[in-house]
Image (cartoon, rainbow, N blue to C red):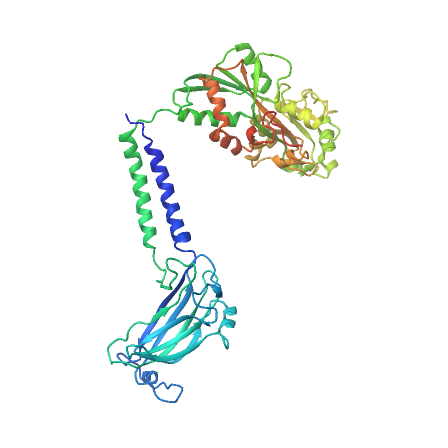
Amino acid sequence: MSKFPWEIVLAVLALVVPVFAFLWEFVFVGRKRLGYRVQVDTTARQEVAAENAGALQRLDDKDGKALTDPSFVLVRIENTGTTNIDSQDYAVLGNVQAGVKINFPDRRVAGMVVTELSDDFLRENFGENSGLGVDNIVDSDGRNVGVIQLPKVPLNQGQHYKVLAVLDRAGPKVKKCPDPEVVAGIKGGVRNGAIRETKSRTGIPRWLTVLVYLLVSVALAEPFVIGLATQDPPPLDCASGSLTVTGSTAFAPVVREAADSYGRTCPDAQFTIEMSGSTDGLERLNEAKSGDVLAFSDGVKGDRSPQLLPRPIAFLLFTIVIHPDAGVRDLTAAQVRDVFAGRVRNWKELGGADQEVRIVDREALSGTRTTFEQQVLDAIEPGENSNDCVEPRRPGTGADVIRCRRNDTESLLDAVAATPGAIGYSELGAAAKRADVRTVWIDGQQASVQGADHGVYPFWQTEYAYTYGEPKADSLAASFLRYLTNQVGADIVRSHGDRPCAELANPVLCRPQT
């Protein structure tokens, strides 16, 4: 079958057409443009009239002479472009005061007034010696023409003013006088710069209607065209086979979502997700000695198992979590160490509620616990003395703060949420999704990449992916690692509150800039 990239062509077309339409309407066509609208042009004949409508026909000119066949015209002058119009932009010589002329063939101007200014400060442009004036002339054909001259008014984008004129017939008596002629030009304006009649923008523009039809047609045609012209092959980096992924429970939500997404793109790939903790995952990988196992670890493995090769994947933020009833949201680093050392027995000692402190830890081999001990406590946590986080294992004892242990991130969060006075720690993305626990700031700093970048938030770690030796380039393990670091995988990492290593100042070490 043809391998012509129809989907790319249609996608580009769907993108280029609206962009071109926008540029055409608002850049190429709509840059500097002066427009006008004749909003009223009517006589005062009594075709359908009220009792006192004759007053409209008894208007006088400046000499006191009654108008014989009066008419009224309302013209709107407006900036319809996307740039401002200055007084120097009018296409007339510098010593000419008038920038716009309105001609009324076969009529003479009996009176006029500038009205309905879009902004009050425009009024200053219509004073004495501004160029505002009225003239009644006879053109070269012997025709009477009334003329209104308007100043070179600066108009910002969207500004306008209106001119109301009272006219009297000065030509052959016909049913309708010729339309007014508005004469003006703008230097550097659209097309030849001439003023153009505009329409009221109350409906959907024709170009927008055509554009919508075109885009709908592209959307409907895409699956049909692609189905006829191509057979979608799997992406170039798709791999087949089976891969067991184990290790960090803190990184497990990212791994599961990425594996599901990869599997939808590459249906010949099969994943087994068994996240049981960083240390346990590394041990399973070392025992398997297989390229079909991938282990994730919160931090480096240390000196053991030299056959295991690391790759920095993401920068993880962790946070302390607490039961909402404890009444504490911000602790100093010293207070955190006192709490987890058992030197604080009740939250009221730190300004919180009158509630006993209960500590929920991770198991000793947890990467999250190791990170907490290294980055925050600078000490090893004591062992647990309770199974349910409420009562000690040996009834009658109570000298120590209650401590319990949970095997994974979600279990720890469940225990903290269910136990009044409980405190623990977890990966930030998992904690942020829970409404039944509260995150705790450390030294006035919430968990954030910015805080870690500036060295004021201490609780973070680099997430590493470990393989047994160097995986083959076409293996599922190598392909999945590339997937985690490309755009789709990076989006998944960010969606869980973490940061891809490639976006940090030192992506090789995947550490923030300190």
